[in-house]
Image (cartoon, rainbow, N blue to C red):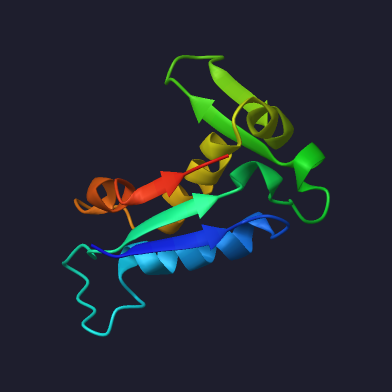
Length: 114
């Protein structure tokens, strides 16, 4: 298996995430097939030292809803990043990988280190 290590120190979250998503989706492989999971594993180091461009740290919110009335929960990116930066990066990557049966297998190939 191939390991690809990406150092995220000082890089914007979206730039790193789009690069990782391309690798996990297999778009960088010569023999790309959309119905196959790539054999490469991606290791992202220094996730806690990434930067968020603009004012996203203070303004961006993630929403979740349980389905009950009045159960809308909002959490700021600043709180997620302070608690665990790996969780924020996983949310970003989760949105960039296509939602199908292979999504869980692709996300298992991702290793995050703070």
